[in-house]
Length: 264
Ligand SMILES: [Zn+2]
Ligand SMILES: [Zn+2]
Image 1 (cartoon, rainbow, N blue to C red):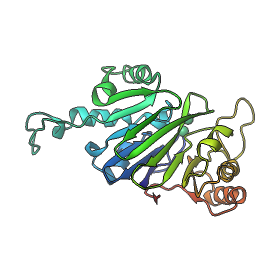
Image 2 (image 1 turned 180 degrees about the vertical axis):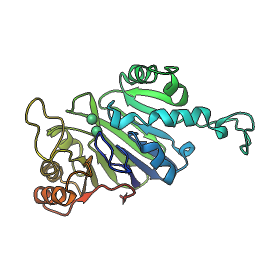
Image 3 (image 1 turned 135 degrees about the vertical axis):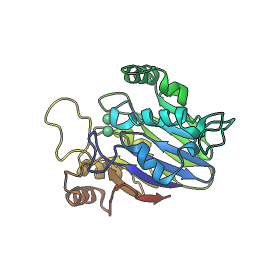
Image 4 (image 1 turned 90 degrees about the vertical axis):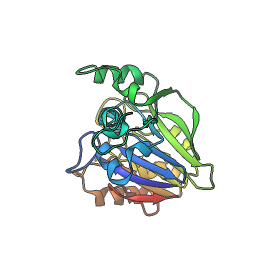
């Protein structure tokens, strides 16, 4: 299984960057994990968008789903997706309509967002939308996907991806505050991709994000093989973040960069 970082910014993009998006590929399976603002453009660098089998959304925050909008426009209006010849495209009887797995309530959220300016069912027309709940398992080609709820400011799921083809197991923590659920869910994974958003813990209110040190500690408790910290702004010192995470993890830690590829 190959994971390519398409975007790793938190809610505001790095210079030339994109918010959360990870391309997960294995022979016969192509999955886009989160589709935050900026991700569709990055996706096009690495993979033809009509080849994406499924998109999985971890939670309904803008930085994890907003680029479903341009992706939907491409699927519905690109010349290559039309049934009749347009320009140099020959026309197709089977336009791509990827699966879209998103948390319960997603259809209503998408309708409210897109309905602000256009036909509110844009995303549902472009994708085959399936809403999922807690502790669901589904298959995309040879990839088995599992979900587990983690604490954040809205209903949010960590995503476990394992290969039924002899490949490894990856856990993506999505966004979360400190918690035991993610530690249990990620236990023994070959790779954990975990957010490390904060330079210091939130001063007040419920916790919704992690510091790099906390991310490293979660990785150590989950006894994962490799740890990647992500969702870090380019306005923070990544060497500081890496050192903090490594101190807690007790081993080298990778900091996600756009274009980075991890093989498990
Ligand atoms: Zn986020
Ligand atoms: Zn979030």
